[in-house]
Length: 160
Image (cartoon, rainbow, N blue to C red; front, side):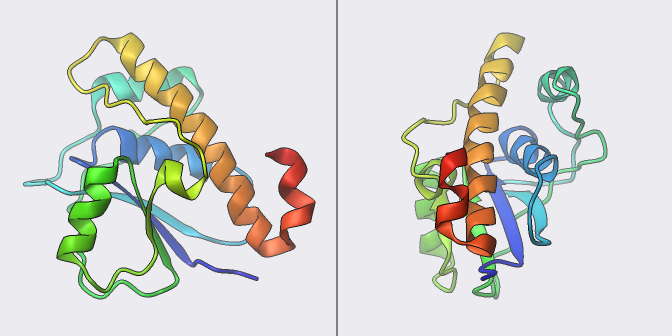
């Protein structure tokens, strides 16, 4: 049973963690078609992704070079849209500003994983690599969960 038609990753500026999560999920095998994008809470103008984030993604054979930041516009979010934030505070902010969003979680909350997603902004390249490792683990669990909606929980439990 398909639960979602669209997934939006939300981060602060849409130049690092959100686009990284988007690119990672797009590299995964999903049983059903899903529109995947990322948006930011504070985007004054479109800008490319953080250079350090792009460098670690390239080392993992992925790229975000065509991504430019976009502002999250709450408006009328349909029930078949899943909104995943990188931090609990971001989730609370979105809920307070957009009462109509029904399916909003932090990424680690939705994947039932207590791992916090580090914010590497302003830190050395190694911090971006650590962030990528955390995101890859969480997004892998996310892909398994999304696939379980299509095929039933039992079939996919072994991949958790």
